Image (cartoon, rainbow, N blue to C red; front, side, top):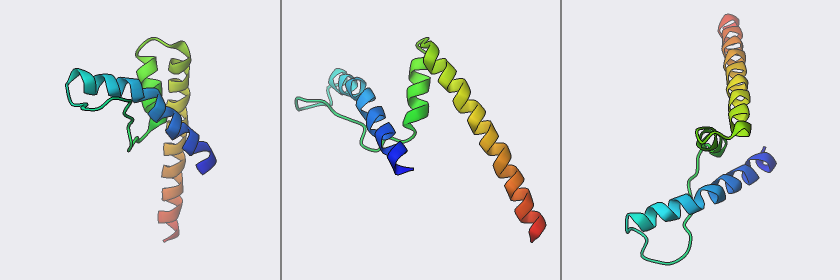
Length: 89
């Protein structure tokens, strides 16, 4: 799992770095030169998909649909699993 998630988190944080830096520069909160990154970046997959999907990127829209389908499948599977645990008690 770490082999999959670590590059995803690094890519997500790197992808959004220019936007975070520009935001800090425009609001006059960056008192140094260089880029800033999002150190505690949660959910890079869905943030990336939403950011690009709302900009009209077809691949991101398809990824969003796939992500949503996988989420619904996981939700149904977890509900079924919880029901089997409750029946066993």
